Image 1 (spheres, rainbow, N blue to C red):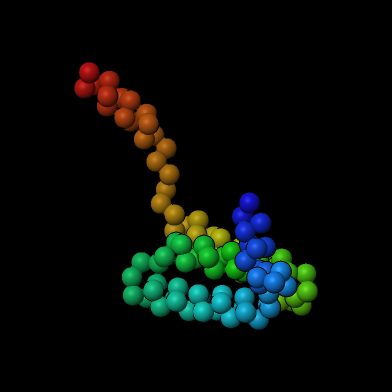
Image 2: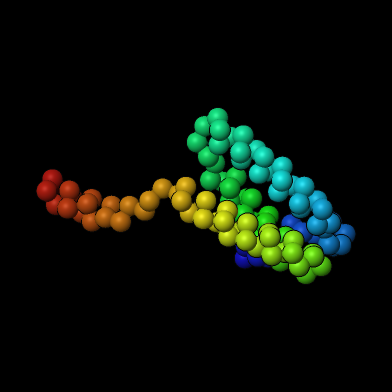
Length: 106
């Protein structure tokens, strides 16, 4: 489903493929905002995720030069790592803790 949305985002209203230059421009703009926000405060997971998706969309464009596709693929993977590291750790025992706490109260 995410792939379908990415493909839709790459199409203009008349169903013509979007220009790769516009995607490159957009992702560079997003990356500069991420850097600026990262220096001012904590990094934004959503923005990093959007950057990763833009790079992935660029890497999937068949008409893009191979070296640019490979670069976008590598950067997409690196941004995916940034997103994973920024995510809060899962609370593994939250349900168990609530059950145990509830059993003590009752």
